[in-house]
Image (cartoon, rainbow, N blue to C red; front, side):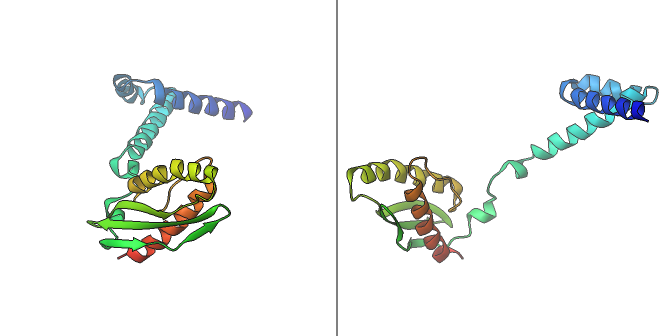
Length: 166
């Protein structure tokens, strides 16, 4: 019993390895030999499964992070988000929607009470804006070193997006 499990495991591992190393022509040869060689049959099954999985994961629909229908759900106009406070100051943004898409984000206020806060804001705000323009949503990553500003920016942005939803 243990020998059988060991052999089946080895065949499965070889099949998985074959899926990543067998060129297309060799894969066709395995299919031809499958009726006479049980090892080839297992390799063929593993290869076909891996090929199917690979094709499914590389389809255009699964590789697109945001569908077009999700990106066109906003009403055109300008929307001002609520002011979002953090320990370094307030962040408030103004969102512009054109053609159902986010086309501009302006920071109306941001932490600037001291030189360091101003420096962080001037570094982070343009990066956050770019991320939003790409993502077309508030689902963006925080900027390293500006986590409080990032969180407040997203909070104000989400408030504006909620106003713009169709």
